[in-house]
Amino acid sequence: MKKLPIGIQTFSEIVQEDYLYIDKTETIYHLITSGKVYFLSRPRRFGKSLLLSTLEAIFKGKKELFKGLWIYDQSFEWKEHPVIRIDFSKKHIENSAELKEFIKLELQDIAEYYHITLVREHYDDIFAELLKKLAQTGKVVLLVDEYDKPILDHITDIETAKEIQETLKSFYTVIKASDEYLKFIFLTGVSKFSKVGVFSGLNNLNDITMDESFSQLLGYTQEELESNFAEWIIQLAEKQKMTVDEVLAMMKKWYNGYRFSKAQSYVYNPFSTLLLFNKNDFENYWFESGTPTFLIDLITTSQFDVPILQHLTVGQQAFASYEIGNLSPIALLYQTGYLTIKEHEGRLYTLGFPNLEVEDSFLNYLSEAYSQVPKELTENYLDKLIRAINSADMAVFFETLKVFFANIPYTLNISLEKHYQTIFYIIFTLLGLRIQAEVVTNKGRIDIVIELADSVYLFEFKLNGTKEQALEQIKSNDYAQKYQGTTKQVILIGVEFDKETRNVGEWIISEP
Image 1: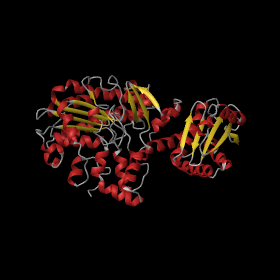
Image 2: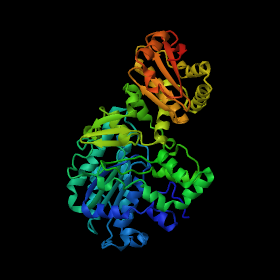
Image 3: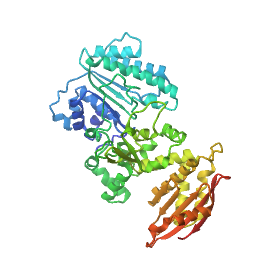
Image 4: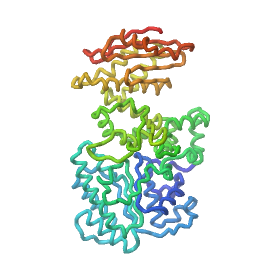
């Protein structure tokens, strides 16, 4: 069993230190032999840095590192090229001036490595000078990692974000004017800001983010998982006291499901997969590695309709690039990996959470944002709700449910029903994920169904009405009809939301 390359993003280190490398070089070969200027957007920790490191090794002519890999035996020239590689995630950039200084220092370090003396002062002039001088020994390869990190770090501070964007725009404008000196260009990031906003000069930029040919370039396919991690899968099955088939099904549910094109090709999150085999336990690894604070803020401040995330149909425009100050929560959620393509028909796409890890974690963070209950306490309260409903103790159930509404600030406008609807949706969905129940939430009526092995609970919450009205709505709409003829006990519960206490109020229980 080779070592697992957890946190290692340098190709040469993986090979030389005998870590496991999933061979993507066939796809990389087709990439570098069929074009020149590329852009790829993928979620964080999906292998973008390792991809750039692999490209760097190829263009530096380090053929021996690839012995045993697909590309090694191909008719590739393995010619050494000077490489400029810049990683914008190396440092947290506070403002435009700091970004310019960062770029200057990075370029000066590269110049020193190639024994080049730079005489210009301005960051974009230095870039142009370095490209021209490096090209005297061979056409230059430019690799840019996390191009958008300085912008995303200030995405809620529009003025600073725009200043940083303009700085990056001037930097990338140099590329087009220096085309004759460049052999290959590859830029990566999490988000897609418009070409006008950042890459105005790169009108020949080939965006392969949703290209079917490269949809599995990052992440692990099912075949790659089973062929490269066979021993780890067996080990995990033994630890979990499960069969191999059961482990594979569980892994697919937790970490698979990412789809980046129209093709029905799915990949596993590589970061979570490696940590799973390292820890031998199913946990939320990827999400916990970085809180999407700006996303949570955007969703809460924009009054985004959270329940639609369960099943969202959009057109092609949802994947388009966007501008600072006019951010689309849906586009951001897709590009950052919290939503993925579930179905595709014609020009329409159905989006949803890729897997259990993302859905459970994301809803936990939203629960904290909307209810003010710390996410580390949410698990405790969810456990109480589960035990209460399994024992049909509705008094405990509703007392526990009240916790999620108790700390909502009084500064919140009580008329914003969507805020309370969202909390109901989040809590009941989290319940369903934990007890494997069928939880159906209709955001319009807030009627909720929890279907257990031997019972079915039908809830109706009235934000502006009484518990009796809520119960009558269940009966008049005959929500229980679909369960007639089954052996399951059907329980109807009408609940009123008290505007005075700003919390769950009285409730009434009945049978059909």
